[in-house]
Amino acid sequence: MAAFDARWMERWQTLVNQDGVTKIIGRHLSADVLMEFGDAVYVVSFVNGTLARVAQNIGPETTYDFALRGPRDTWGKFIQPVPPPMYNDIWAMAHPLHGRLKIEGNVKVMWQNLRAFTWTLDLMRNVKE
Amino acid sequence: MAKIEPITGRYIYVPYEGEDYRVYYEEGGQGIPLVCLHTAGTDSREWRHQLCDPDINRNFRVIALDLPRHGKSIPPKGWWKEEYKLTAKFYSEFLMAFCRELGLDKPVIMGSSMGGNICLHLALNFANEVRSLIAIEACDYSPGWWLDWLWNPHMHGGEVAATSVYGLMAPQSPLEYRQETWWYYAQGGPGIFKGDLYFYSVDHDFRESCSKLNGTVPIYFMTGVYDFACTPEMTEQTAEKVKGSECIIMEEIGHFPMSENPVTFKKYLMPVLAKVLQSR
Image (tube, rainbow over all chains, first blue to last red; front, top):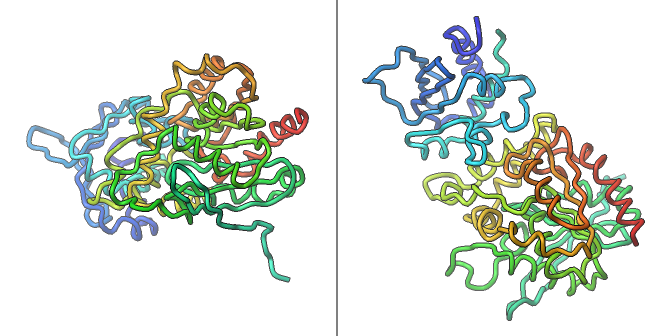
């Protein structure tokens, strides 16, 4: 298993769904999010705070609400147990001053759910490879 | 025996441009006045550790105010008739009006983020009224934060404001203090964080003015390595242009040193305060 492969994503999904804080702050988080880790691409579907599906096989009929697109190296720093400066947060990486991550699509949904969504992403640092 | 902190809070009326602003402030300690400025959208609670630190209180009268519209300082009359946009003019002039009304003799001004950026304007326009400036997480230009998402009825403004700044804090800072800082941010009034960011990212463009500072007032720039809004490089580049300034880069800390990690911040702050004392 390596970071961002299907098994790694499955373990992250389990962590999210077992997490007590996500259950509290994420109950209104429902969104399909395209996550691009370099050449590894998924659509992850949150339903009322549960990470219900992680879909591969992205194609012309794939729909999603918003997308986070970044190189594998950027995401690799983000998931380090102690991420380096400028890589510890998606807004840090996506801020116009830095541009290491692209956030596209209906970003309003992301801002509406920013607290719960970023909390679940932080759980990636707890995935055991 | 009750555990009571040696901080007192009071209200003062500050006259400014025909309005009497009811301003809340807290203070602790005795000595050289040290006026502390909160970051955008929050209030003086960010300074609660420094307000009652005996090592600081020994030589400094630490004062932290809530700007109008923040914390316990109510907005001016008719506030609902205009969109709030903080300007360098109001911020600097109002701050000095507060210091005069309180009878402070050449205070040290210490602020973080927008409170750091305003120090440059104070150096330019009020050099004779201040002793030293401690500009934390400050630089001459900090774009990219005046965003509509931060004031939009389709989302919870407090949660959005607080989460947008959460990543500005270092992972090494205690989770409890990072969450406490988040909590302060979640309590700002509607549109106040965004209105403050008008100053932070739009009205504050000091790039052409740094060279006008003549070095009369010592300026200590202090920036944490995890600050992605005002990076160490942005502060260093500003400090290079400002006469009489010193630049201190702080490891393992972010944009809110005083509240996210008061222990680490103190290690960097005490030597600066010692220099302020020596220059008395």
